[in-house]
Length: 167
View 1: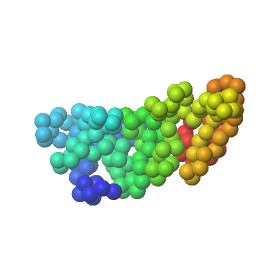
View 2: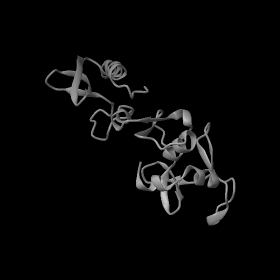
View 3: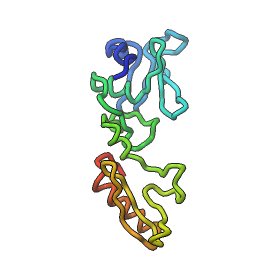
């Protein structure tokens, strides 16, 4: 929990915002600060997360949703199961360690030559390889003649070894 989260009480939160657990939307319960009662609260920050300003601080709405619904701040990282940062429905959120959150990755990074998560071309083996990290150690499968076969092998590895995987 951050210092600013420590400052925000559940009672105060529930007097200024309502939370719809099915949709993940927050709505204003007050018209202070130029907002209208009932309007959707917040905006999207530069990282694609929905945020709302309260008491001079910006709060990520997925963390607020956890706090609002469960009555306690999350102890770890609030992961969006579907990887959609705008989907703050309570069923889409889970409180997990950061390492588990990282296992829920669904897209290849910009460094990926193939643009496919967990698959690369091995010049030495003359085939496509599947690879994941488990406790900072690489686990590889292959070579495969096609990228699709390597991708299927990667998904099998991910589902077997990454508890955070939601694919």
